[in-house]
Length: 202
Image 1 (cartoon, one colour):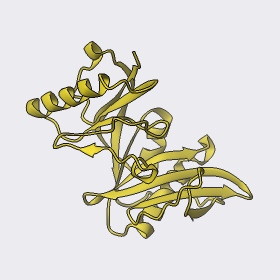
Image 2 (image 1 turned 90 degrees about the vertical axis):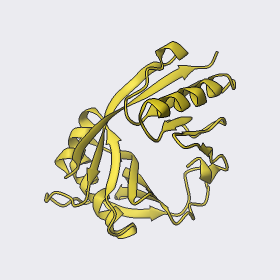
Image 3 (image 1 turned 90 degrees about the horizontal axis):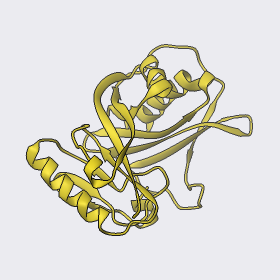
């Protein structure tokens, strides 16, 4: 999404960083590896971001729940778990009709071959959605939207949609709470923990 908006950020060996404004609910840093040496680079990159006067609240996704950023002025926003699935669980069908979108809500073209945005409709109303991004032999799933009664069916449908859009690749993501349970009920496997930290400007 950052790249689609012309602000792709920068990949370092152990962390991705973006010193510009990112889309809502997206972090400005994501850890990519773990280990003592990796943590040192990650903390250094995050300290530079903290000194760059980013506006408002901004976040760091600690992909391995390995950093303590409290001394840098961060608070834990939430803890979650990684999830992974190759095949969906068997379950009831749903009347939700899915469509792959070609433009974002802001009118931006979604012509990246590695990206797919799906919306699910019941009649004329959008009641579900999810985004996929293919990278490094997996398909990342994020921004899942589902009403509580549809949640398991939506997660299951998204696995099937990923298989059509990006064949033979496992689907990965992270969730917590009721959304995590819905994903597990739909056929995802529970993985390692992660943590998202948030910091207010100033």
